Image 1 (cartoon, rainbow, N blue to C red):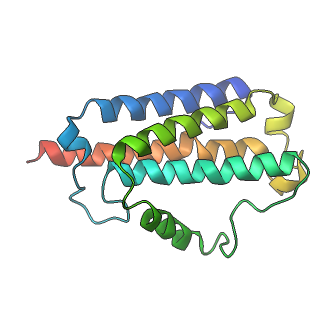
Image 2: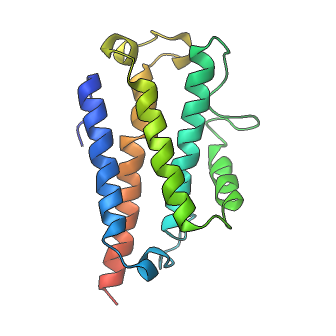
Length: 170
């Protein structure tokens, strides 16, 4: 998966990976979609994976909208930092143990569209110039977009592919 270097490739890769995820899930029967992963992991099922993506979208949406409006906020909420974010992921997992798969699916679709709409008015300069925005630190905004979308979707696709392969092995 080549890393995007312009807005068009950023949008295309994000949509491509998102559609791949949607298609892969839709190819499974309802019982398979609700099934438990037979491998040891934080995420025990497809719902957990989708909620993880949704919650990271929420982080990105909150961070970008606040910072673009002049209200500087960190990407990760207190008390988390880049060393402790695995605990945040566990908190997300715990928070959503009663969330139905159908809701996880619709929330992810909505949050994906929100992320894509947020980057729509931005051009290559806004997205790919390092330090263009002070709140991105030493990198560019696109690196956060990629992390919240195509890279995360690739992670989810691999996890669900592993699950699908385990179904074939039965």
